[in-house]
Figure 1 (cartoon, helix red, strand yellow):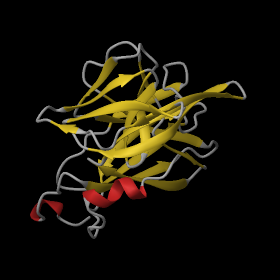
Figure 2 (cartoon, one colour):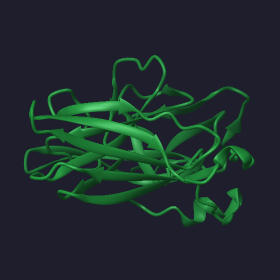
Figure 3 (cartoon, helix red, strand yellow):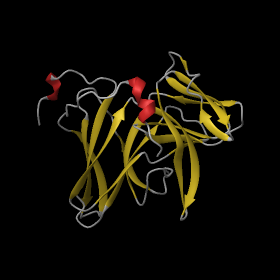
Length: 236
């Protein structure tokens, strides 16, 4: 591993790489990365944000752009007994912004022409009667389920990251204790953008464990600027 301590600290908007390794010899591991917010109140649902099924003695990599927040309008679908949240509109957003939801031709959508900026460490969505969400890297992560019209939803930031092993999980599914085998907080620092998560199986105790370590830093060229992104965010 190279000496990452001699490199300059990473900018706030950085692409992160999470290597997911399965060292269990006899089973496929379902990994998921999810987010939590400080003092999350009732009515908010944490969902599977990034996910990968990794075969025995194999590895998969998931990536995301930290600090590139999104606001979304989401629908709830019950597919084959599994409830999933999927976005019908998702837009690039910044910390401190206040977004307004309006209705056009019977469709709830964000008013991109009336976004207010503040210095608060939060994102607020006002005037709505819909399922709303925030996320990162064009994927939804935390949903506030439908509440009364003319109310507002505030997502307190910064967010925290967790990685877990699940019995069976797909992106957009709600995170709950009955499907989570075990999880650990993923603490991201400003020295590296690469982390290695390893699922290990103890043949003596027949138990799984999770280990997280810093990997070698990847250098990523800067791409789009903020003004272009809402034109490029696609529906999920």
